[in-house]
Figure 1 (cartoon, helix red, strand yellow):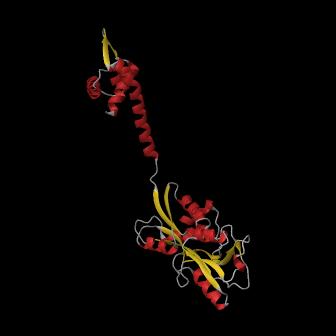
Figure 2: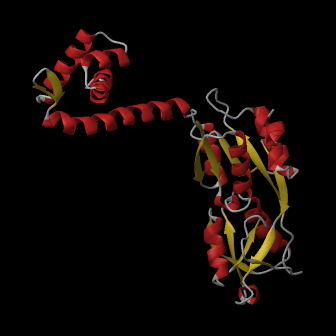
Figure 3: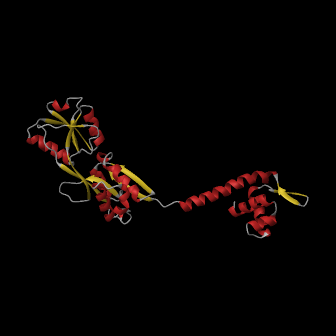
Length: 290
C-alpha cells in the first residue's frame, strides 16, 4: 500500500471530506479519489458508504482507519530512526585468553571512547594463531606477546614471568616437580624448561596448553605449578623459591593488519598504546586519537 494514500485516507478520517482532505495533504480532489479507489482495490473492501449527500466510512473503513494510523506511525518512526542512526564501525580484535581479563578490557574501553557506534568482534585464541589471522586479513587489531627478537607492534607493557601455585596443595614439593606450561613458542615455556635444566631440578611436564584458562585450572586443582605472566595468573598465588629459575620478561604489544579497509591506522595504534601504557584518563582519548 502506498504510504501517501494512507495519509490521504487519514486526512479524510480527520476532516470528513475529500475536499478538505485534499487541502490538508496538498493534492487535488481527483487525486485523492484515485488514491482511495486504489486502496479499496488493494484491500478488496469498500472503505466508504454514502448516507444521503454525505460520504462516511463503512464498517471496514472504520476498522482500517485504526491500522492505517499504526502503519503511518510505524513508517515515520522507522524513517526517523534510520536517519538518526550513525553508521557503525566494524573492528575485529584478536587476543589470547592470557590477557582477556587484564589487558583486553582496557583496550576495549579505549576503543569505545574513540567510536561511539563500534561494532566490536573479539576473537580469543593463542598469540601464534592471532598473528596468522592478522596476516590473512581476518583480524584488524590484536593484542599479542611478541617474540624476544622482534620489535613488531606498539608496546603496551612488559612483564616478568612468575611461577604460580595453589597453596592449598603441595604440587611445589613433589618430585619430580610437575609443571603446567604454555606451548613451545611461548617465552615462559622455554624459560621454565631451560632454567630448570640449568638448576638441575628434576621436573616433568604435566601439560602444555595454549590457554591460560586451562593452565590456571590445572594449577588451581593442585596438579602442577605454572609459569606465566602476572597479567594471566588470575587468583593464583605467586611462588617465590630459590630452587626455581627466574623467568624471562615478555612484551605485550598491539599490532594491526596492513589493510586499506582497516579502521585503525598506525598513528592511532601508537596513540592508543601510549594512552594505555601511561594509564591516561579515558577523557583524554580524543587527544590520543588525533
